[in-house]
Image (cartoon, rainbow, N blue to C red; front, side):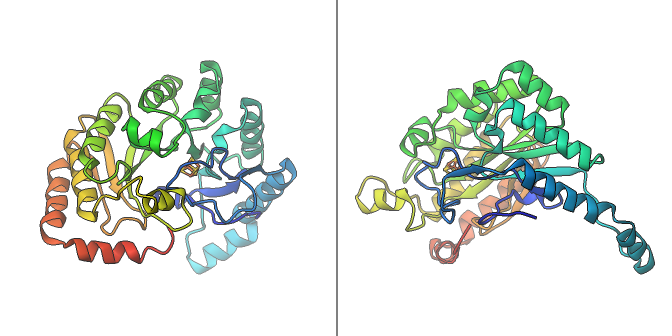
Length: 310
Ligand code: SF4
């Protein structure tokens, strides 16, 4: 398989086949982000030749009769998959034509694949028509992961995210209409010191107008090679405390009125959780209160300092 640099995928895509369609990010401007700094370029699309070669390799690995016989002899369950996750920060930026071509290749080589997911930016959706989105849904594109980070416009603008909350609502409503589901990544800490709860309320307001399958909370870790590190050094921005980040997440959950799943699963979170709301809301809030009331800033800070890489 062809893989370039560090491969990032959401925790819940662990059983998906990872196919490198793109590497890097077309935007590459968010001040807090260092995810693709190990690449010698900002963004690149894989060649169709490499994509086909990877699909052939996956076909051989998954359909190989010898591995099926070995599995039945050893009693091990053979690995199966019904979903492909396209790697890169925003493969959904590719044109409708390219995404159609890639979906056709996936279904030709791996006819058992039911859905295709990827990370996507809000601006990747706006570049497609309603009919194109609807056709992409028919081709299997589903359950995209969108790092909206927050619904706080002041934070989105300061961090150079490249869109504001009204864009999130507009473009995700178009996905709803097209039948393409989506999950959100939320970045606790993005609003800066003293503004965590304000940002959480703005974010809840955005989410309450949409239908995310899941809202996955990540916690901001500022790395020295980020633009945000320099902003802090120059006195232009101040970080929230670790406890403020937990209070922020609690406020977000308190204000959510939709049916969804809320989770903290990645390595940026000292405590992991997942709950469906509204059913599991009270239990989850009690869990967060326990953290807020019993874990010290020092203990949480020690964890943050040891997050070497997201
Ligand atoms: S946060 Fe996402 S969109 Fe922003 S620069 Fe990083 S990978 Fe690109």
